[in-house]
Image (tube, rainbow, N blue to C red; front, top):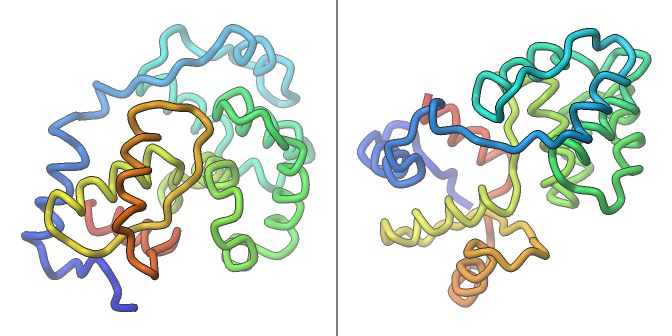
Amino acid sequence: MNEYPNCKDREAVTRLWALVSGGLTPDHYWWCITDVARVEWRELNGVCSPIPEGNGYGTLQFIHKNLEGFFGGPDRNQIARWIVSRWGGIYRGVEAADGWIDAIYAEGVNHFINTQGTNRIASWSKLLSMHDSENYAVYDSRTSTALNCCLAVMGRSERFVMVNSRSRTPAYFAKLKLRKGRCNEAHGYRDYLKLLKCFS
């Protein structure tokens, strides 16, 4: 499969970014941090400061700063479960996070990504993004649907791997429509990270 996107094709990359971002900036970021998540945050060993009020970009930066590099810490399993369930909102099978963290710590991120492929990517990509937000990012149903919708609008045939979602949101129905015309091959997580580098 040909690599996409080609960062040298600045016109295509610029148009795709305009469609994906919709002109939004970090100031528009919003992600609900529940009261339960805030309480359990204080119970994490090694975390001494409460999460600031609000659900904006500043709150996300605070969480990133406090958890960056947590893979090597003694409390990494407890923190991993908090990230996947309380921050990420994925509760089914959250105990798998223990094995992911142990595998990443023992064998490295690259080996882990190669082994996992796209299996439960919406969960473990959240761990990677918290560990190192400069090089990894969340890849979930919203991400894949938004990217593929924008590529379809551009008239491109490329598609990224579609992530399953049980919630019947607008993204869910958009995904059903996209799947009717999806290609046989789809770009995965590493292609997604390359795309983000093109945007920067």
